Length: 135
Image (cartoon, rainbow, N blue to C red; front, side, top):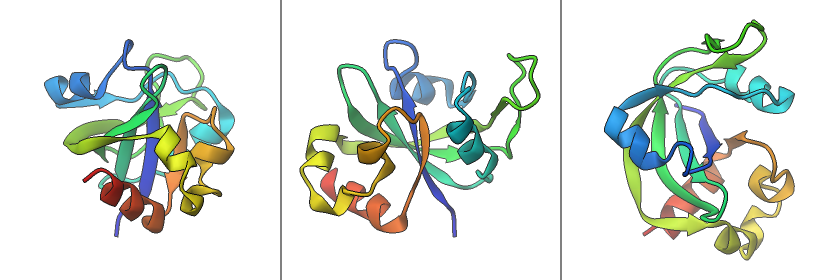
């Protein structure tokens, strides 16, 4: 049984379509301690929603964690870790932050409570609810 995550990206910097085109990428550049803790908890085979921040503010697609965590090669600090992710599928319809915030089921979801966090865990219940909302 995989664990579930949400990973944020600014689509003007790196979008889900970029991931689809490249098929796989290293999720580099994370420096927030809480986000790094979540990356360290990831395992190959886990699934992650890719969330477009900025103007879009929507869950766009699903990625699979394709590696165990490892030191970010772009950084000199071994505490800064990354994982490889590969595209899995685009959601039929994006799920907006506004629609998530409007639904009481998401009141305790990190995306609503700790909105600045770039990598966060997602419970199976929330994962399934977002998938249902995307249809």
